[in-house]
Structures are given as structure tokens and as C-alpha cells.
Image 1 (cartoon, rainbow, N blue to C red):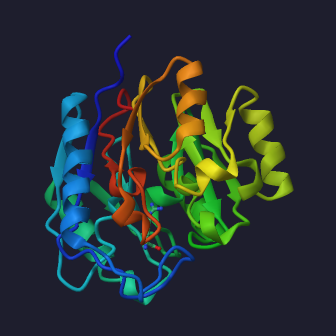
Image 2 (cartoon, rainbow, N blue to C red):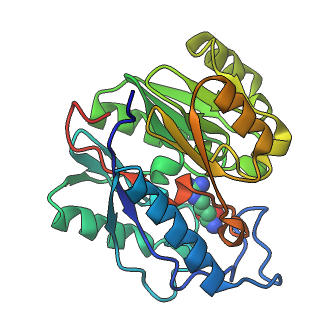
Length: 271
Ligand code: ARG
């Protein structure tokens, strides 16, 4: 079986830096090697191309060091895009840049109206939208997502500041299955996840701490941080083909492969 061919939007980390701290991973006093970040990101892009995926690029803007994290640029489902509104002023100017790229590329774009950090907190699994809240995306944004996309939204409460976006605590593996760190969720949300995904892969804190859950799956291949060795083994045991990548520089800002990758879902067949 082949994986699903996907279309992604990425942003080269030309201006990547850690100049401010809006999550516990970020230490503005620690050195960052931007050239190495670019090389690591190029390898991620090459990995997607080698898997047969399509990668679109948005121009990076100076003064927006986190713009490399394209997953936070929108949520795009069935050819419709929900624009984003960042919690932190440092990232605010990324929102119109992503919005205008999507408009120029022919997507219909809706306004978020509440704090909503895009695919960082909103993940489609089969016919459900899993939506995180607690740190970034507001609960109010979830109702708007449901109304806009017409998929039932399942609200999940994140409780560990290291796993501040849903995509740092949970990976969609295919239409039926996810992998997640139970401890990153409130007791009620854990119960919801157990009910919806009885066969889910339960990750360990050690793997989540290297952002192992910030992975990208096409249903067959899973691209994940190579440091997540335990999770890699669990996924292989389930029959997934894992591809390890090293994004150590971007991890200094709290991001991994999934954060760098926005899915552009054109139509209904493209899940
Ligand atoms: N420094 C960025 C922030 O804190 C990292 C964003 C990572 N993106 C993601 N989809 N988890 O906003």
C-alpha cells in the first residue's frame, strides 16, 4: 500500500532565531545556528519530495523568526482555509502573510475571530476535527471551526506547558489512529481519546520531550524526529515505515517536523 500523496506549505527558516520566549523550549540566551536550521529544514523538504508529496513555499519575512512553523499559518480542509490569530504579539504579523498566500493560491479564507493557531491545534482524523485548547487556541475558536468546516469538533484540554500545541502531544497516523502522550491531556480529555481511539499508540514522556509526536504521516510513512527512538520502534511494530529527521535547531523554538508543515487539503477526497 502506498501512502496518500499530500500537498504541503512550508517556509524556509531564513530568519529563524530565538529572540523571545513564548513557550518553555525557548531560551533567548542560548545560541542558535540559523544556517544549520536551514540545512535541517531542507532535508525535511527533500524527504517529503522523495515520498512523492508536493511542497509549496511561502516567502519568509524578516523579523518573524517563528514563521518557519507553517502549521500555525492556517487550517485548510476541503479547499477552505481558516486564517489564524496568534496569542502572542510577536507572531501576529505572520497571520496576514499566510492569509494572503492562501488567497493568492485560490483558497477561500474565513476569519478566525478568536485566538486560533491553525494546524498546531487543529488536526483532522477521519471525520473528526481534534482541537486543542489550554495554552494557545481558545475554546471559542473550536465552535467556529465546527461551524466553518462542518466536521464535529472534539475539544481536548492540554495541561503540560511543554506540550502547548496539540501537534506536540498527538500525531494523526491515519484515518482511524493516532499516537499521543496521555499525560499531556486533562483526565476528561484522556477518557475521550481512549473512547475514540482504543487502538492508539501511547507515547512515552521521553519521546514527547524530543518532540517525537510532532510527526507527519501519510498513512504509511511517518516522518518524525530521529531522537524519538522508542516511538519509532512502536510505530514500526504497527507496520508504519518511519523516516527519522533531525530538526535540533528548530526544537530550540519548540518546533519539529509537523510544525514546519501545513497540509493543504484541496477537496473532499483529499483527507
Ligand atoms: N516558537 C513557536 C511558538 O511557540 C513554535 C511553534 C511550533 N508550532 C507548532 N505547530 N507546534 O509559537
